[in-house]
Amino acid sequence: MQSLAVRFLLLVLAFATPVAAELVDVGRAVDAARRAGLRILDGAHLALATDRPPRAGDGLAEFPAIFDAAVASWCGHFGMAPHDVADWKAFGCLVVDRERFRAAGLLPETLPEFPNGFCDRNRFWLMDQSSPAYRRHLLLHEGVHAFTLTLRDLATPPWYAEGIAEYLAMHRLEAAADGLPRFTPTPLPDSKADVEQLGRIESVRTLRRAGTMPGLVDVFATPPTDHREIAAYAASWAAVACLARHPAHAAAFAACERGPLDATFTDRLAAEPSWDGGRAVRDFDAFTDELDYGFDFARSAIDWAPGRRPVGRETREVDATRGWQNTGLSLVMGGTYAIAASGTVRLGELSAQVGQPMTALESEADGISLRWYRGRPAGRLLAAQWVERPEGGGRPRFVVLATGARCTATAAVDGPLYLKVNEPPGELADNRGAFTVTVTP
Image 1 (spheres, rainbow, N blue to C red):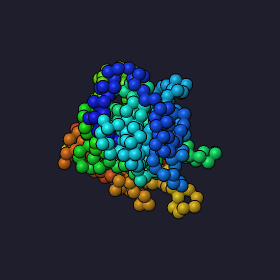
Image 2 (cartoon, helix red, strand yellow):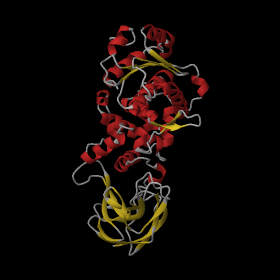
Image 3 (cartoon, rainbow, N blue to C red):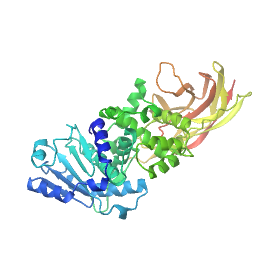
Image 4 (cartoon, rainbow, N blue to C red):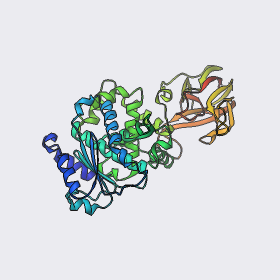
């Protein structure tokens, strides 16, 4: 993926005149590729030229059909009708030997020496990759650039331009009735298998552990040159994913996307009537802190209400199907609180051995040793507070104060007590039950 410093300059020049007048003639490009002896893979929305020799199982023959299916999903995201883009087509080059494309006039000398991919209007290039999954992702990432540049006049700040390309390119292939692979968008991947060797979720986790994960305001201010690094792509993707999927922000984000995708995009988002910038900053930190495959935004959305001080023993129900739950009880920094939990919850369904019947796991508040998540038994009751300035630095996060069926918590800050059942955020939907928890100063 090319230096965005160069891309930004190209965008400034490209949008000085109408985009439609600068579209690449795909037919002429295909003719030039054929004269050079390049292999052509053709579909409704993509003509792909490559010097990569055919290899059994490489999946290249399916690229045009996958690209066409992806275009339909991109139309859905932007609220466009498929018939509005019926005549739109991109020309791509999958490159092994750059010199062969240069000799054919298909790789201009004016382009930067991009390491992976580059897009110019409805024409793009990608270097061949050792991973078939990453090769497809790169094809679709540059395809999103071509789509948004030419059909939506994209000229947004870099965080959105790269974040939306990552978001809309993520996918998995599923077998269809005809035996051919079917494109299924997974903007927030369900499993590692969906995004082989992509590592965006892992990158965010690494940044959080290192205390270097940017906040939402920092992501919004990402300069073009920072997108030379994988971390910047991961952060931009995370910002788009959070704003597009979080129930508190999705409406404002979608409304902004329906408007011009221009340099005012971030400012217009902040001006949307339903936009709550303070909450968005906090929700983004909570998302990147808890991020995992299949993250369930609806079940993990945080109630940030301040709450009240507990009076004597207070009883709360902790739903196993939700993430951090605000008890409505505001603790006093340095105060100690006795927490006791009773009851059992069911944690989805697991199979002890391959081929064996699926069995539900029952857990009390101390958790079960059969399965662990983030260093603690699954099913264990966790008690935490949101801390804006965690000890040791880094972004704001939930700091766990105590765990288990009977424990004592010492408040880290003045603020609400949050409780949850320890479970991956992507596996909450099939849980059942609740713990009954008492909190006593």
